[in-house]
Amino acid sequence: MKLDILSIESLQEIVKVAKDQGVAELKVEAKDFKVSVNFATAAAPIHYVQPISQAAPAAAAHPVAAPVKAVASDAGLHVIKSPFVGTFYASPSPGKPSYAKVGDKVKTGQPLCVLEAMKIMNEIDSDINGEIVEICVDNESLVEFGQPLFKIKPN
Image (cartoon, rainbow, N blue to C red; front, side):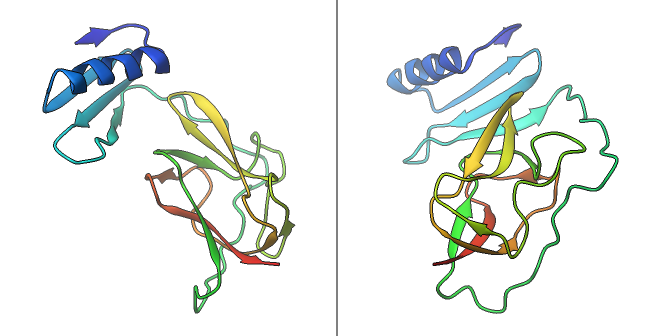
């Protein structure tokens, strides 16, 4: 199926109808993306297959990637994971300071990064008070569903 314009709501409706009809696999192509859904698994996850055309963000005057610090043990750390497949951005826009750095104290609801999916920017907020001990991904990198983004030592 080829579509020129597709909203999230339209995609959800297409997936729901296909699932209700017992379709085993569904592939949807739109102008800017392709989506493949395999209903063989229990949760019927949606997999982002490949961007067709993607405008790269303008290069920042200063690098915005926060330093990544390795943590010897994850015991007692809270891990914030990616809720979907997308591109990780450490700052709100190129040239702006990072939302969070290793060593920063964060509060519940505080923005930590932006994940871009299907040209929609989504702020990812902290769901715990604590101190960031590790940023697990580099700026402008592609992240998978469930991939660790931040490790936070709870207060």
